[in-house]
Amino acid sequence: QVQLQESGPGLVKPSETLSLSCSVSGGSIIAHCWSWIRQSAGKGLEWIGRVYASGKTDYNPSLKSRVTMSADTSKNQLSLKLNSVTAADTAMYYCARGLGGGADLENWFDTWGQGTLVTVSS
Amino acid sequence: EVVLTQSPATLSLSPGDRATLFCRASQDISRYLAWYQQRPGQAPRLLIYDASNRATDIPARFSASGSGTDFTLTISSLEPEDFAVYYCQQRYRWPPLTFGGGTKVEIK
Image (cartoon, rainbow over all chains, first blue to last red; front, side, top):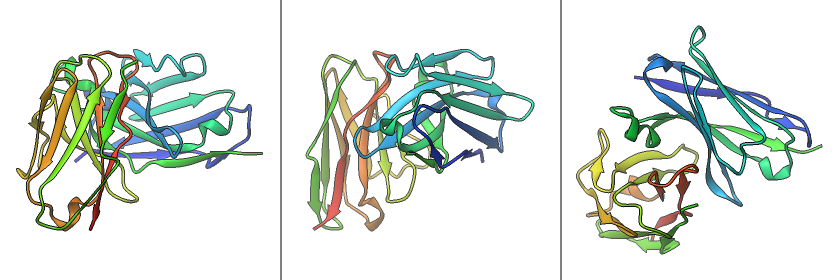
């Protein structure tokens, strides 16, 4: 059974870059599409973007100018970078696996990590 | 951007009751809607995708229907573990993929 584990600093200073990793175990990242989703009290669940093992990405237009996602097949790991953070970026950050079984189904999320809480504060 | 509006915000029910949750889209999204359950301290869990397809290992007491702009999730008889927050999500018009604001099902 595939498992996802997010990791990264829990505290980031305003204007700096938030960097998170998602380690995937029990399955290869090659077979699926992988999304990053965040959850805050103020904005609820917000899709940040998605990445394939090939490196192909799609981003939320509202965050596109600040987001970079990548995949490392040698480590079976995904990464998220969000630059120029502000307090509004304080949230629980999740990585999630697309359902699979066809491109159309990759935008449903059938497996989630436990999430990592990131606070933006000086 | 497709806005999803969930109602009611809170549903107060007892174990064994039937729960009916609603999700309305700001524009036609065909049947491209999913439902998730989130228990306290946990990540969301996929219940339903493409409006009415139950995800793997989801009990039959969860069912859903709808198309276009109006969707419904029904829990036929609430179990103690069903008291949680439920979210809808659309994939028809993206990016971005969007979620509703959630309905909390609480014990009456």
